Image (cartoon, rainbow, N blue to C red; front, side, top):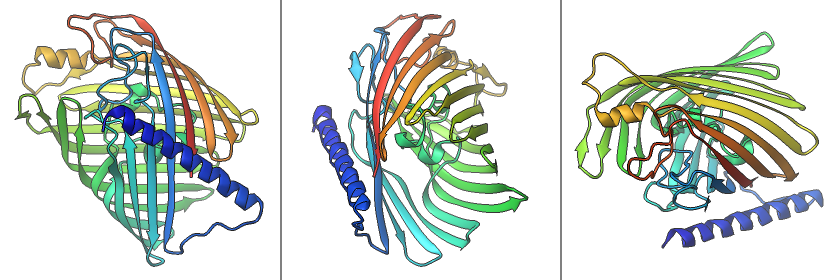
Length: 384
C-alpha cells in the first residue's frame, strides 16, 4: 500500500474518531451515560498536520527518523506532524494494571505502519509508589509522556532544536517512581533501566544499558524537572552493513514551567555527550484569551565539540557536528470544541555559519550557510 493510500486511511480514522468523540460529548450533555468496561478502558489521540517550507534546496523535518519533508521533496507535506494513536489500559486488581499504546505515523521506511510505543505492566505499592516493566516512556523532557499527543501542548510540535537532540522516546526495561510531599510542594523521584532501537532512513541505532535518574518538583503552578541518563550506543549503517563501536552517551536535562489559567511559560535545556558535546534550549510563553492561545518561542542548538579519547574525526563526522540552527516561532492555538484544537504556526529558521542545520535531502555540494527560511505549519488535534 503506498503512502497516499495509507495516509488517506489515517485521515478517515481521524475524522471518524473526531465524530465519535463529538457524539459522545453530546450524549454526556443529554445525560446519556457512555458504556464502558470495568476492566478495560479505550482512548486515543490524533493529529492531522500540514507544513510548507520556503527552502527549496532541502527538506525541513522535525525528527531524524523522517526520510523527507516540506521543501525540496514537496511544497507541502503531512509527514512531520500527522499521526494517530490508540491506547488500551486494563486494571486487573487495585494494584496491578497494564497499558498498550500503538501509534501510526510517518516512518523511516516511507510508510505509516503502526508501531508499539508503550506496552507495560504496573504494580502500585501505594498511591505514591509504583514499579513498571515493559516498554515505557523515557522521561527526558517535560513533554515526554505526551510527546506524540499534539492536544497536550501549545505548539504544532515541540521545539525542534531541543527535541531532535534525543530521538529516543521509550525504553524496554523497568522503572520505578516514589512521590512524597514537602510541605505544600510535591516531589517525585524516578529511576529506570532498559534498552532501545531506532530506525532511521540510512541507519539503525541501538542503545543498551540505559539507566537514568529523574526528579520532578511541583509547587502550586510551578514545576522544575531535572534528569540524568547514560547508555551505550551503536549505529548500524544499512547501505554498508557495518555496525559502529559501542560509544558511551550521557544526557543532562533541565526543564521548568509556570502554567496558570491565564498564561504559561516553559523552558528546557539539555547537554549531550558522546564522541562530542553539544547543548540545546528553548524558552516559550503565551497567554490564554477565552479559547485562543497566542504564543512565542525561541529555540537553538549549539555546534558539537569533539571530546578527547576518541578516533580522529572524519569529514562526515565534522559535517554532522556542525549542525546548528535557531528558530523563532509565532503561533496561535484555538480550542474550538471539547477535546479538539486548531493550531497555526510560523517559524523563521536561521542556519548557523558552516552548516546546513537539520535540513536533509540537499543536492550535492549545497551550502546554505547562514541563510534563513520560513516554515508555515497547521494542525488539527483531538483526543478521544
